[in-house]
Image (cartoon, rainbow, N blue to C red; front, top):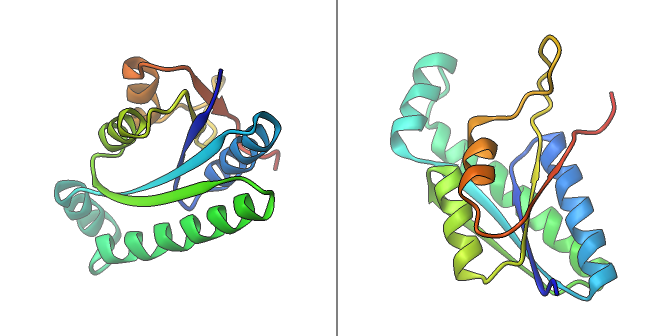
Length: 146
């Protein structure tokens, strides 16, 4: 029986679609939703700064994730789904898996990256780690059609 569904979100269209699917599943099953966003750790933030030239990427990322979590929570509660949202800091896959354990999640829902390569759909490294190390089933939601 699925009582708690954890959805990992960021500011991508794939994550929004994953959140929509997770909310629909919660509403249909009478489950609660735990929405998790992760601000990348300091080392990853430094790489983003050197590549993008952005000043304080962690602050920008935290602001974006907070907005996404507010949106997801509002939509889920509007659908009558009990929801808890949390913004964590660290390595995304590790934090998602840790929160799944803390929340006693029965299912993890993640979005598949919306980058397209030649041939195969792209699965990001964080999604791969979640798939590899999750102790519960993982639903990978494809991005919306262009």
